[in-house]
Image: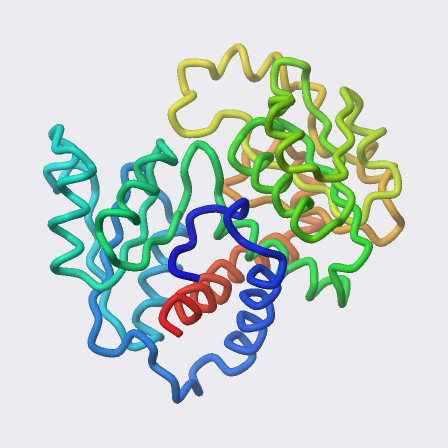
Length: 298
């Protein structure tokens, strides 16, 4: 594994290797003798802001022995019109790895190709692989296994999280249900390319029926703020609430990749009842990302 650009680009074996190593790194945090990033400086290039992504990567890089350099789009020439190709060629000669959080998936792929350094997708409009890896780790911790898990994703099924769940289901072979308005279904081409066992419905309770995991995300992703009013109306019926939870399996877990807007995609009551799992999920970003960076250097 040279880069972490998407779940689509990973094999099942690579996904499971990251999850397995993440469990071990979590169990031995603070006791690690191995410092795979010792003497290295990794750049964090963020065109989109984040709390969890920035903190988890900066802490993870330092715990692996490296140093982190945060670069927002307002601080580098990329934000003033320099082509991603030129930024990649420059930074590839100065830093040892790159973590990029931006809009276009193609920008990350170009950077990885031209920079010659390990490159990690920390979120694009197409996929959010680091979050999915943390989610899979969390599900394994909560259930004891990923085998046979049934996941119901409720909300915008064509967002980066919905698309990443499709690829995770395709790679690992679990059942995925998507509950979404018609306008926010994933493209047929994507579903055909993935070949995953995906069911799409307009009824959240139908998607939740017997599910082990109920999952949601914000209705308005970064860059979609001008659609906020329209989206709120479209997604109002697609909330994880007590009725949806009741339809799920008796010991189902509710997950949210955060930030959460209580009263919109999830009720405050359901969120608080599942806060332990949700913040376990948030913590696991650190461990999954440390595992990915370790494997990129092996």
